Image (cartoon, rainbow, N blue to C red):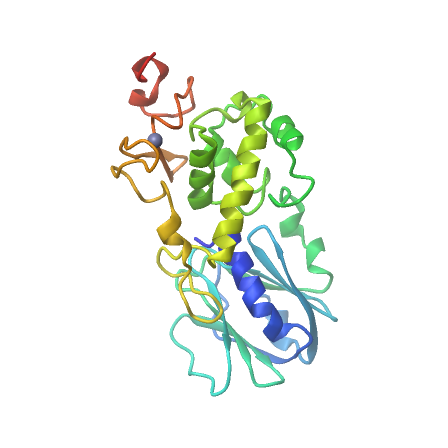
Length: 291
Ligand SMILES: [Zn+2]
C-alpha cells in the first residue's frame, strides 16, 4: 500500500507537470472506487492548477475553482503521460486531460482509492479533519506523541499506523522505524518512555526521508508518475525479512501479526515486550532471553 514516501514521491514528480497548467476536461471511466468518484468531477472544465499538496497519504490537486482529493488506496498510482497518449488499460479509471496535451492518469487495480471533487481548499475536506499531524510537522513533537499515547494499551505499531495519531505511516515504515529505534512493535503505546518517543520520531523522520529520496518502496503495484518502481525495497532492514538474519546481530527476524497487519522485528535488538496486547506467547517477558 502506498504510504507517505510513495505519495510524497508522486507529488514531487508530478508537481512540475501540473502546476500552472489548465485542466481541459476530466474523463471518468470507472467511478466505483472505495468512495465513488464525485459525479461533479467529470463536469469540471478549464481549471487552473495552482498546486499539488500532500496531507498524510492524500494528494490534494488544488485549482482556482476547487480541489481534487486523491487517495491511492492499496494499489493506486498516478501517471504523467506525454503525447502520444497511450490508450487506457483495464484499471485506468480516470484521466485528467491538461490543455497542453499531457494527461494525469489514475490507475487502481483494487479500487480502494478515491478521487473526489471539493469546491473549497482541499485542506478543509472532512476526510482530513481527523488526521493527526504529519511526522515532519513541528506539531508532531515527542511531547505530543507521549501525551496522545498516555494510558493507551494498544500495541505501538498499530498505534503508529492509526492516522488519527500521526498521518501517513503504514506497516512498512512503522516496522523500519521501530527497528532503528530498538522498540518492540507490540509494546503498549502508553508504556513508551519519554526519551524513546524522541528517538522513535527521529527514526521515523530518517526512514521516511530516505524512502522519499528513493521514490518509496514497490512491493507490487506502486509506480512513480514516470512509471518506474520505488527503489527503497533493497534498503529495508526488517520488513519482509522474516527468518533472515538481523543486520545488526544475526538473530532471525520474526514476523508478528498485530491487528491483521504484519510486523517484522528483531527479538534481540528490539528488546522484550512487557505484557503487550495480543502478542504471541513466545514474546512474553518470561520467555525472553536473559530474563
Ligand atoms: Zn538484531
